[in-house]
Image 1 (cartoon, rainbow, N blue to C red):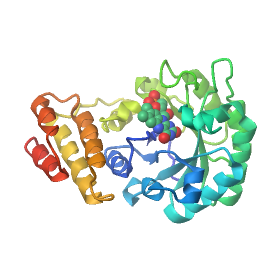
Image 2 (image 1 turned 180 degrees about the vertical axis):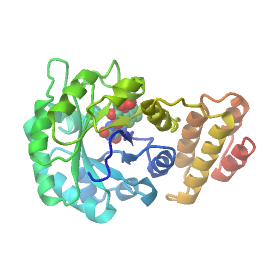
Image 3 (image 1 turned 120 degrees about the vertical axis):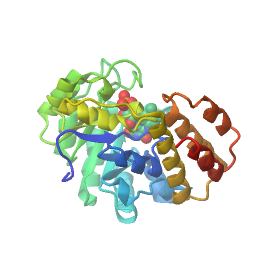
Length: 315
Ligand SMILES: Cc1cc2nc3c(=O)[nH]c(=O)nc-3n(C[C@H](O)[C@H](O)[C@H](O)COP(=O)(O)O)c2cc1C
């Protein structure tokens, strides 16, 4: 993981939110790298639907990893090889933490927290076939009575994983409650490979960030609508003050997002893309004063051009 430097900040993969446009923009605003939303290995192997479009990455996002999930070592390795050749990400990340029922019932994502040997077999097979680094993202365990770290992390390290992102919650916690940073720190100290800490990073104090044994951090929900969070965390690590963005800066970011989305022109801006864009833009404007009318007017917008025009009035 040549690109990693101490205090590296990743934008977390968040399905439905962190598309390529979003990742590029967040990179520009201070995230050091990102990971794509997860894709099932079988979807890659079958080339189903818009799977390769979903995994598309822009050079402006780099370093970026493509995230896969699945339960079969050979399929995961074959899918990873295809991704390496067709998408050329900087690394391939394996999801061992998704608590969504469809992932778990398929024996993938967080289901594998109950089977560290299978996790290791997946990493071993993938690492033997894929040239770029294979990384993993996992939780502390299935539940508070089934904690698998640091042992599972060591097993993955011995199987060839080159970086681990540890979300300091269990599967049963989902996204609620506090992340256990003591366990994250203990794990980071016990490994030779870099560990990225994840779980409400925005709540860590400047000294906790600075003194951490983690090679870097991954920020999830606190970044939604708030790409300035990366700058805030970096300033906090340096003991510098951070000035919150003005409403005008927020509107400028929203406009930029709309323009980039129009420029990227995925598959034409479909009404689903437009609804998605409006949702993201609402989030960028969330904390800015004076956007009540804009938010109201945005409901009547039917095209990306109209959206851009509307936002221009505020910049
Ligand atoms: C809406 C949503 C979608 C997510 N999608 C993914 C995903 O595709 N892959 C993944 O590894 N984690 C996913 N996560 C988990 C986040 O990457 C992250 O681990 C989690 O939100 C904890 O970080 P936070 O406390 O900073 O939000 C998702 C989380 C949310 C809220």
